[in-house]
Image (tube, rainbow, N blue to C red; front, side, top):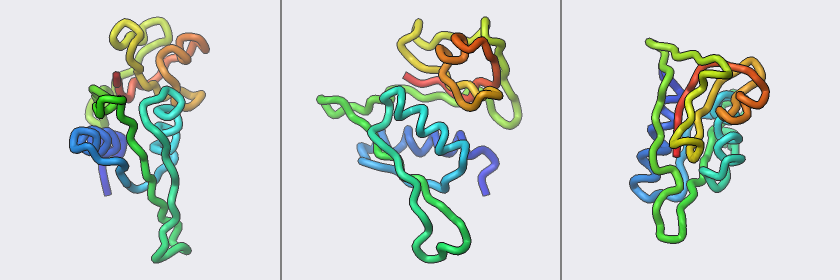
Length: 136
């Protein structure tokens, strides 16, 4: 049991990219699948898939496999990834106060009542929420 599955997800991505791995696996949750969909749409990962547990399919355990993306020189597309809000200190922003990562070149992931959104999409929809992480 992890007390902060988002931090675990980000750390696994960071470590796997630093080590040059093609993919990384972890337990699948709806939040992590949604975060993976957002990273895929923004072009930070190559793909992801949700795998059923082969040993015990009835238990409902699922695994999330994220395939990392590298540029033509072999460097990871995710250069920096940082957890902002955490269980001990939640960080909330209104739609007008959302930070711009690298003046718009990066992405801030915001958990809103409309689901996980990028900072640009949250500004466009005029919704604020909990700032989960920033990456570029």
